[in-house]
Image (tube, rainbow, N blue to C red):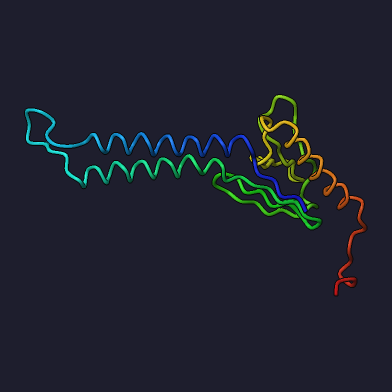
Length: 153
């Protein structure tokens, strides 16, 4: 079994989330009193709303650290930022990680592609090891004899 998550993107996502939350918290503490010659006054509810926006922004940044890919002898499961794909090996034609591309892709039998955001070029050797492992699982399935309906138990 192979279980891969991106390394560098997760670090950047956490740093960005902390920075976003810190900036919004700083702005929230600065929102006090009147804004000058008007009737507008910042209240504690406005400060709480600003912190809430910071939490939402931080969660959005953390979503980019969500991608993950699992490979087993039965198939591959790809979780990207918003979508998850579960595919048996027989629908995967190839696992591509072309030079100059930011992440790996699954080339499917129906000529469609699925991006694998968990395997990113910026992770260098970590990404290469992951692609090699997935390719070996894919090749093992391709060379395995096809099961017949009678051979199931």
